[in-house]
Length: 328
Image (tube, rainbow, N blue to C red; front, side, top):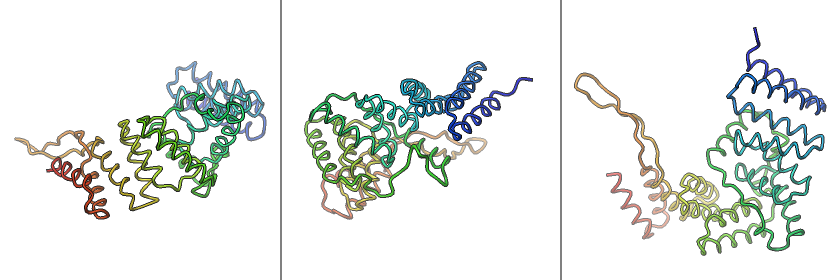
């Protein structure tokens, strides 16, 4: 009887992992390739496993200095599972080795959207910034490819997988900084924040988000940077991202009125599923299906918190009335 797909691919992957740990990168790459062939020949639909195998083989190529094949495998891994941390970091390293600094910068910045404390990405951004300033001049940002906006779902997926896979240690690819200000370049962060503010005044919220994100990569102690980025997310109707940024802002400053107000606005627009409710039928008790509603309760709670800080805040009073009508 032929071995089960999961068993055979699992054994080949485990053998590849052992060879990689032993420094036998060519042999490990061969084992990962065999595992991929097994999956493809048997018609596997396990995209996550296939993505991991491509990413692992990319790590072998990177160790052997084969940057072009590393990039190719990382791109295949990301096509299967977008915004995966390790393929992004490995591809960034390969781009950097090939002196394709704009592409490396984009990948490092994408990683920081997923987890802004990944030290290898923070250091990579700093290196790429210096290299790009030297090669492209002061207008280097205008010559970059666009940086994709990472959805909240990808951030949550990474957080879940990271804690599941590394409960007692940290991956070498994703070593995190211990302090809340990884690079310590507070002045650089301030300048980038001001640039973001100017873009907001011009109505360019997408570019402003990039500036605020870059500012936070230098220093993430500034509450108003998070609440300013939340304003941009609100303008773009990215309500979950706005809630997340306001929450981070309030962790740093529990009296950030704008963060309370903007999170209340986001909750007011954010749709949530209500739990199923019992309803009396003619013959027996029945359950209604859950329905999608706006999160007015969370919005109302944030407005009340704001008004305890600033009782005469007119916009908040107006929003309170609007939400109260929806609740009643």
